[in-house]
Length: 60
Image (cartoon, rainbow, N blue to C red; front, side, top):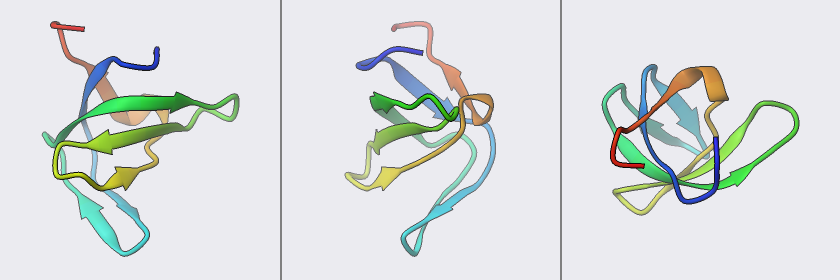
């Protein structure tokens, strides 16, 4: 997983009172050694899924 890649969530993520659902898409802004990502979702909110909770979109 690399910064700038487009991803799609494969599971529901709840963070900071916001819920992102499977199928929601965003852009990776950070990759962390603990297996978490910082993702700016298309709705403008930030989520923190694990790498096994996302799929990289083919256009990346």
